[in-house]
Image (cartoon, rainbow, N blue to C red; front, top):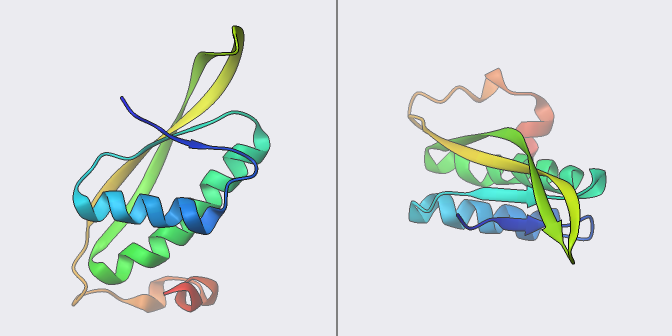
Length: 106
């Protein structure tokens, strides 16, 4: 399984673009993060990607799991985020259900 590897230095907007592109192409999206900063950037990217995708009729959510990985021969704990895609009806979409902050992203 391939992962988008997100670091603390990753641009959330760039990661969000990758997520949105993969969702639109029907490609499964999984991210791998090591460290709190990397998880922070991945979650910001998810929020931005939702703003890109909801107007197109897709919503996304994610589920985290811990995973032991090797980096340079050293055992580390990563958090892997599986992204789930939900089809929504844009015609029945009620933007009033979301906060003002979310509306600004759309």
